[in-house]
Amino acid sequence: MWLRSGRPCEARFALGGVGLLLLSGCNSIGDFGRLQGAIVTDNIHAWVGQEAAIHAGAPVSLDHLTDEERTLRDLAFPLIEPPYDRIRWDAIVFEYGLKPEVRAALWVADPAAYYHVLQEANYRSTAGRYNRLIDDIRNDTVRLAPFFDAARRVVELDRRRLLAMDHLPDVGPAARLNAKARVGENNLTIAWVQNSLAQRCAGYRFALDHMVVAEPENFAAQADVALTRLQQQLAMNQLVPGPRIASRGPITK
Image 1 (tube, helix red, strand yellow):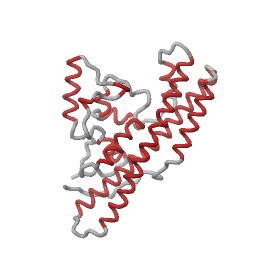
Image 2: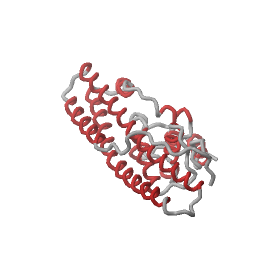
Image 3: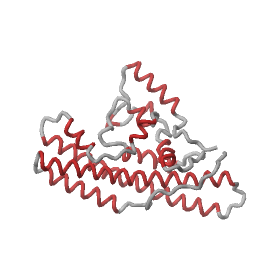
Image 4: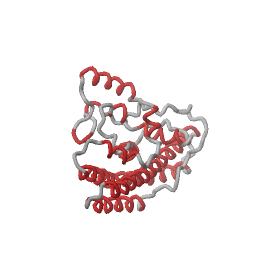
């Protein structure tokens, strides 16, 4: 049968970790905005591919993730989550995708949201808001290359996978459907990141345009250069033209 929950097998571990953190009064965030190592598992972001498929009405594979597919999902998450949500007390719940409403919120596009966050933040000066904008844009630019390098490796391995199936008559229908579903998940994950980055660029542009009018500073030129570079990098990394949905049908292991 199809796996439709979108919740990885580590969910029970993560829920236990949340309880321990709440009881101890500890924060789940460690250095550089990352989750503390003790509560990170290999498949922490496995749900990302599942969510991409479920959102598109596509099947979810029951096959194990390869190392490259796991890396793809790990690198995808920071480019999907809003840039202003990285440091949060419930980051473990957020990163494990345990709440349906949290996963659903990741698909909501509001170009004004980032600007409102900047305006509500307690910065002492206009320079602080511009610096935050520039840092977020540059962080996305830095994350973009490793993700698309991993995406290209996955796409190539998927191409070989599909070619191999044509020459392996002993591979049964269920295995073939699971393989095709995984290819669909991978492509939909890449498409999700491409779309998310485009939306983020729109949000950054909205914020910059409004700040130039409301709080003009020389920093605006730096922000514009950084945003243009991010948009150029994104334009050169359109690996999938749109959502690619794997074949539907019952899948068994």
